[in-house]
Structures are given as structure tokens and as C-alpha cells.
Image (cartoon, rainbow over all chains, first blue to last red; front, side):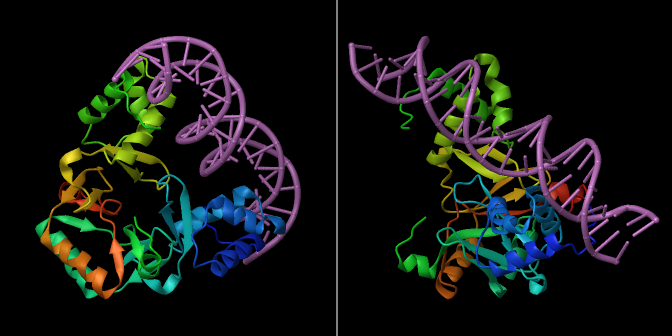
Length: 137
Length: 137
DNA sequence: TTGCGTGCAAAGGTTTTGCATGGCA
DNA sequence: TGCCATGCAAAACCTTTGCACGCAA
């Protein structure tokens, strides 16, 4: 439960995640990507759990609303203090550092008595590139 | 696929959802709630799919981040035009009709070139009541 | 040497699917 | 009457767990 050893499997997995940090991956995608190195599926699931707890991996709901997808996040991103935009078409994750969102957070806190957790919240929509290509959702 | 017949099972299921519209339910919760009326589990899953497509049911990620939960939404709520707040502690769903959020949406559209889909987006956090009770997330 | 992390396989849980039957329009 | 929706059970998935072994510190 402590994940304190730096095992080969752990290194292989985080390396794979970093090399694909622009994409959203399923647990099986990750397994397929490193199974040739002899990493078992249960280890993949266990390490995914650890990395999510440590905040190095974000969990998303897939397009169909059912599947679970993961995406690597740099440790020094301070994701508790900004919103995230996620394009439903291409999957790109945008870290939104913007004063306007802080205003909204404070407004909702004061006027609507609700405390937003920014690390857990994802604003879904369509990014500029996909918009140009005609994506709509 | 068209769901054009008003079957007994469909009526039983939507009635059950309406009677529990304040709560988030798993597919199995719904099945347990109406199985005594002779509704099969596959019918529950198929109807859930239809209702989600029609926008009468919203899909959420459960607390542990893995399970899938559903919540009934009135058809006349126009959920495409406001954000939703969801309390991670008690599960209450709040429809947030507020000018400030429209401002933010327009700001992100213009300045960050990202089109937010409000129906798909849920702002997670803690509601006032749970806050008082000491909930933190 | 100690005990955590791993691999395997089995178990557990959830969702989908094929097919014959039943019921809505 | 003609189809669509349903129920059942099996299949397909996805994720977790028990246990013995291997490896990091």
C-alpha cells in the first residue's frame, strides 16, 4: 500500500505514461504497452491506483460515459488551483490558469455556498482545432 | 434501438427514477427497485441507455472514481444552458442558473478558444450542509 | 534479511449479446 | 398482424484478490 520501492515495473510504467502524456489511456492500453517487458496486469492496476492517489495520474470518464481513461500529469502542475478543459473530440487536456475562474470559484463559494474541488472537476467541450475541423458535441 | 413503445417495463423504470430523482443510483439499485415487478436486468440496462441518449438521465462517476451512477433529470430543465454542481459527500445535484457562469463560458470561448458543453460538465465539490457537518474533499 | 511488490490464476462484479417469446400499436 | 422490446442465460469485460515467490533496500 505504501509503494515505497522503485521496482523495474514501476519505472517501466511511469516511463510509458510520460512518453504518452498527451493521450488518454485505458488500463488495458497501458498493459498492452508494457506487457512485452513482463509486467503483469495486476501490477498495472495496482500502480495506476498508487499514481492516482499521488496525483500523478488523472482519471477521466471516456467518451461513451462508461470506460475509465487515465492521463499523466506533471507533479509540479499544482492541479488543485486551476480548472481543466478536456476536448471530447481529440482528448487534449488543457490546464486553465485564469483569474476569471478564480472569480467564479469564489462567487460560487459565497453566493451559492458550494466549495468546488478543482482537481476533481473537468470542463468538457471542444477545443479550437477540433472546432475548425467541424467537431461538435 | 428506437424505444418507441411505451411498455410496462419502461413506465415502471421511469416511475422509479422519478420517485428517487434526488438520489444517485447504480444500475443495480434500479434493478433491485423494480425486479419484483418482473423487469429483467437487461431491460434495465437497455432503458438506461435510451434515457441517457434522450437526456433524461445523467451519468456520474461514483465516489471511488470507478462505479457508474445515474440520476434522473426533468426534461424541462434545459440542462444545456447551466452548470451542475455535485456534492461528493451526499450526492445532491444542483442546477446552477447564474449569470456569472455564462460570463465564464463566454470568456473561455473567446479568450481560450474552447467551447464548453454544459450538459456534460459537472463541477464537483462539497455542498453547504455537508460542509457544516465537517465533510472535506 | 525483511517485507513489500509482483505474477498468475481465480474470483467477483458489471455490462452486453443471442435467441425465442411476448406485447404494443 | 408486424415488429419492437423483453427475459433468460451465456458470454464478454473489467477489476480485485489470494498466495507463493522474487527483488529492493
